[in-house]
Image 1 (cartoon, rainbow, N blue to C red):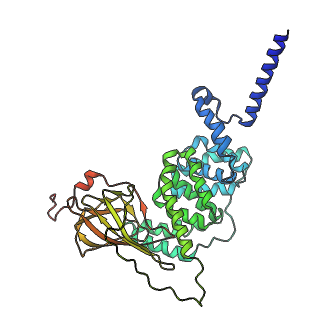
Image 2: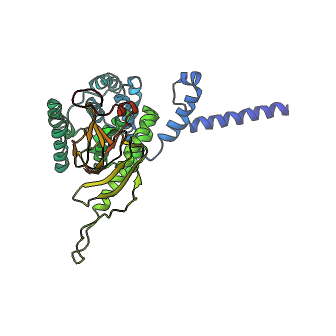
Image 3: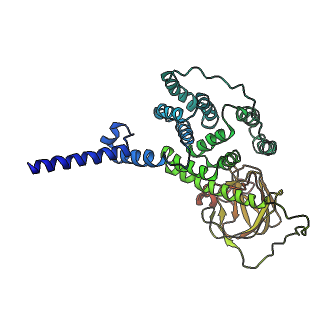
Length: 412
């Protein structure tokens, strides 16, 4: 009898422990998950919903906003309904959810947005939410200086090649959509930033991450967005965003230092600055941005309100940059040797001492030494919202070794 009682007691304790565990980490994943992929069930219950969602690093409403954005922008319609319900429970209004979809039509395409509407309408009907109407609040005024710089970039980099796209960008995207009051500026920026990470488009992330932080998103929140999206769009997309966010954070810190209060008028004015040349000095070019042996020296950055900076870059034979763009363009002064430069879709061009190369804003390009001769150039670029360059993939060896072509079209 005592053995039976002990057995019953042990079973009761085990059941109590199991119940307590269940209360701590309730099952969230669909029942089939535990039959097919129990590990996925564990990570869903214990990590995603047991650890990530409860984390205070990002408010529940923001997590819902980021999650619905990711599902819509990546076309994951099957799970949109459950997360729209969660978003409503977390404080998003039907009007904000509708405007989120409208924003994403421009950044991930109309098909994704229209497909999402059908799923969201089911939730609205289920909760007896009526038709959403446009807000009658005043239109949002965008910061004039930033808009002037953005418009100038579009007019310079886009209009000559795609005038209709440039017109729609200035007149509709930023002239209308971004001014709608249905989403707060911070939330609209957060939606756009999350979509760019989710769909693997980090090239435009610096502009929108800076805009989001200008609109009130904190650095810690911006970093947490990438961590959250890792679960909904995959680790590769989140990891690809990290170097871009790192540069945004660094540039904002540098800008904040440059914009520190000026010395009192009783102090001596700031004198001119000379960056002295030191033979053999310099630092290696980061391996993630360069191929081959590269040294960077004489690096300088002007003080605000100026935004120009530059450096002398020496490439050993065969060395070159990765593909990249500059928000306000770049100028190269060839100092010595023989170099190559190429814009996307164009031929490799040869450059020699005394040549000056101008790369327009947002044009994908690379530059470096010739395959059999070193080259040194002085590079100058301006920062836009603290961003100077957006790095991309490296130039493939076979594409680089094709080399420049002479005027007759035959390989040189």
